[in-house]
Image 1 (cartoon, rainbow, N blue to C red):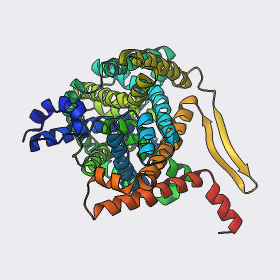
Image 2 (image 1 turned 30 degrees about the horizontal axis):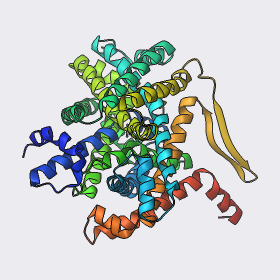
Image 3 (image 1 turned 90 degrees about the vertical axis):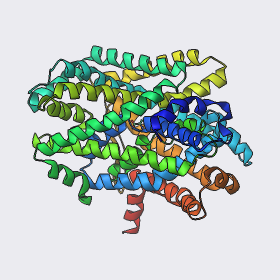
Image 4 (image 1 turned 180 degrees about the horizontal axis):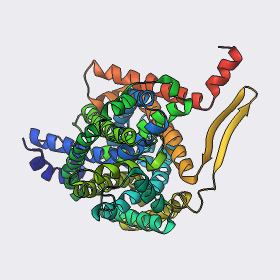
Amino acid sequence: MSDSVSLGKGPSANKEPSAGREPSAGRELWSSRLTFILAATGSAVGLGNIWKFPYITGENGGGAFVLIYLFCIAGIGIPIMMAEIMLGRRGRQDPVTTMKHLAKESGHSRSWGLLGWLGVIAGFLILSYYSVIAGWAMAYIPRMASGVFTGLEAEAVNSVFASLVSSPESLLAWHSIFIFMTMMIVARGVRGGLEKAVTFLMPMLFVLLIILIFYAIDTGYFKQGLAYLFNPDFSKITTEGILSAMGHAFFTLSLGMGAIMVYGSYLPKNTSIAKASIAVAFMDTLVALLAGMVIFPIVFANALEPGAGPGLIFKTLPLAFGNMDYGTLFGTLFFVLLVFAAWTSSISLIEPAITWSMKTFKVSRIRASVISGFLVWLMGLLTVFSFNLASDFTFSSAISTKYGEFVILKDATAFDFLDYLTSNIMLPLGGLMIAIYAGWLMKKAYSREELNINRFWYPVWSFLVRYVAPLMVVVVFLNAMGVIAFVRSIMGI
Ligand code: TRP
């Protein structure tokens, strides 16, 4: 069966209110599940995989961090993704209304609507900085296309990046364009054309990563790159690193804020949530690991710093493109596709806020988009200036006890703070609440009916979502807050 043929018809079938009806032919079922998988993959695969994963891996010393991250994807990410899709499909509304409605259905407090709220705010805050970074990627398109990087050495590439981020005007302009692009799509309703584009652009991004892998092998430092990514050295890992690995598992899978819940709300009744979740998590992880396998060999071949921070891919990839055959073409295409991947993600970041505000304030989709777009843009100024005019404006926060000092944030700019607050705190907190709701409060009959997985897998899921995921989140939180070190120091262990 040809996927693209069935997908051509998929999007409209997906959006119909009758999504819960039984599809009459096997073909339609395929089409719907694939459509959902594409939309969810479009949301999951984005800057998180290609920009953020390599740079936080570099900041946290490599292998051990990657291992913890993979562990979090499997043990927390997949079960919570299933839970989130399930709640969305059962509620079929925006996250706030869905949670209120489901809580009522199972006889619990309507204050579960707060979970939806947390998500709306988190999505809003994430998009405010996500858009600025997507703006960097956009700014690289004309630079790539005009051959700015051709034959450049690492130092010169660095200074191209430095001059970009030190210009508030450029960042502001690209940030504005990106928000405008996102809101254009959101205002028209998300699905449809976008999905067709995802079907074809996502695989292209994948192909380009593979081409880059060949370049990475060619550097002669591929082995070092792999060793860095996959040989765990636990002495490099800090409690902060563990928290970031977990936070990133949520971030990269778009979990914990209702984005996947909204997408789940369009999912036909009898598609397998488990298979869809595993497929999305698999593709997402694959893209991130490929990006890492491209970046680190380039880092080592050019004696760059793995912990260079948010600029890492902008300092490494142009070196590859600038020194390979057809680099101008591939490089331009790569940044176009990266912007596209960021675009499909950013839409899902704002979609919960749009569906919620349309309902709450009884405004049209267009008006909701214009207003939210303006607010996100405004909020984004904090990030724009945190790389230049306000880069000295940093703050640190630490809890000091008589047992020692527990640093939470050190010299954080507004961007660092927003990123920390959302990925490391809000998303895991949202995910924790989703796990608790789906695992403990929702009637088992409902979750069993929704998930419709066999006798073996249901208890596995249930165990993960009731015990493993919540415990892991709580332990990582307590660890990062210094509580565990504190208790150990008292008990002398
Ligand atoms: N997952 C996306 C990425 O990796 C970002 C993203 C989109 C997201 N929607 C989200 C993150 C919802 C958290 C929650 O780039």
